[in-house]
Structures are given as C-alpha cells and as structure tokens.
Image (cartoon, rainbow, N blue to C red; front, top):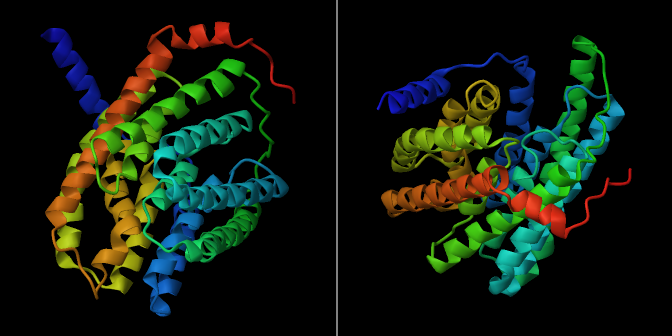
Length: 360
C-alpha cells in the first residue's frame, strides 16, 4: 500500500510539474500562423474544407530545427513537406482497397520512423506524417479529387515552409548562438529494430480498430504512435498516463465547444489559439498540453461537419468515439513500449537480422 501511494504521489507530481524550457514565444506564434492561416484563407473563400486539408500540411513548420544553420533548416522543412504530402496521397489511394490499411500504415510507420531516427529528427518525429496518412484514410471523397486534395496539403506545407524561413531569419538575427548540424544515428537497434516494432504495433492498432468496427478511427494509430515512440519505457508510461488524464479533462472542453456550434471564423481562430497553447506548453507540461490537443485535432478532422452551416447532431456520440480511439491507441502504445523495452523481443530480432552499422 505504501508503495502504491508513493507511485501515485510521484505520478501526480509529474502531472502538475512544469519543466523549464528555452522555447521562446516566437515558435508557438509562428506555429499558430502556419496552422491557422490556411483555415482563415479557406473561410474567407467560403471553403473551410480546403483550409482544413491545408492545415495538415501546415504542421510542417513544427519540424523546423532550432539549433542548425539556415540551409539545414530549409532542407529539413522541404523534405518534411514532401513527406507529409506523400503520406497524405498514399492514405487517399489506399481507400481503393481498405483491407490493405493495416499493411500500409504499418509499413509507412516503419519507413518514416526509421528515416526520422536516422536523420536525428527531434519530436514530433513521425507523428504528423502518420496523422496525415491516417486522416486521409478516413476521408470521404470522389477519386477524381485526389490530385486536388493532394495539392491542397502541399500548398499548406509550402506556406509553412515560407513561415519557417521567415521565422528562422528572425531567430538567427535576434538570438545568435552556436549552430551545429546533428549527426546521423547509425544505431541499428534504435533505428531499424525499434522502427519495425513501432510500425507493427501502430498497424496492430488499426487492425484492432477495424475488428471492433470503430467509425472514423483516425486517432487510434496517432495515439498509439504518440505514446510508443519514447526512448525509454518510463517515458512511454509517463506520456501514456499524462495523455489519458489530460484527455479526460479535454473531452469536457471539446463537448462544450461542440455545443456552442462556433462559426467558421470562430473555428479558424480557435485553431490558432489552441495551436499556440499546445506548442508553448507541450515541452513544459505534456499533460496540460494534452488538454488542448484533443479539441484541436477534433476540430481539424470534424470542423467541416459542425461549422456554422452544419453542426453535429450528437456531440456526445462523437466525444465517446474519440475517447475510445484515444484510450485504445494509448493502451496499445503502452503494450508496444513494454514489448520493446521490457522484453527480449528486440534482442531476438537482432539475432534474426544481422546487426550492421548503417552506412553513412
């Protein structure tokens, strides 16, 4: 009993603690612009659904490195914009054969995770690549719209790259500091073996969601990946607990937002505000940031339904579905983290696959 109380006190302390961070306000402000401007443009032209797709591409900005020279930053965001666009396109065309979703999402997660780890891409790592892929697999559209929708996400990514360039110029001028280019990570186990296991568990989350016949389960693999990609099991456990606790609070907030049925302009400005809050606090207190992550992502995925001219008939049903998605994905992510860090599965795969140093 004493040990349980000790663990509980420690987890609560982690939940409410605020970490120090050197992240300045300019970064969340620029991130909010990158995600919000496509929404504002879409609303202005009375096509919020276009803005929603472009906003996914706007997440490219979050991959802007903060300690590297300008040329490396631009190479990074351009590669990310191409990758997110490609993942979105693959998600769209995968709907032609739904039984392939497990394999497509698992394989894409393996490839993207391995590339991000090999090139030392910091968090969010593969998260938004798989988010674009997962959201695309759940979209309803005509096959002739694939080039149009792919172009929209690329335009959002291009706008984010432009904002990243201007942001980098400002930060390098105002806050000059020693700049370095990160080395490639050639650890075979970390880059290849872990990526394979992460991809399999993310794919497994999709398979279970399909077996359970969950509707619009785009958030299941995203929740799984968000939890499982920690370097240590302790990180995975803390993030999983904080995510579920933060989600419990955020659902009440999301439900109130849905009940108010905000206008399209209101949705766009809420996306900007929520993005700023999330990016400011995510490195300081993940649990607090998670409170705002859920309404933000639901708006990005569902806004077209509850805009001023529509509205969701049953917000409670939507909230219930998203709770199931997040809990299911988080638990599978926790299980995957345990399998990777607390069992012999990694060493077993290393024996089956010859261990080699990745050539640079």
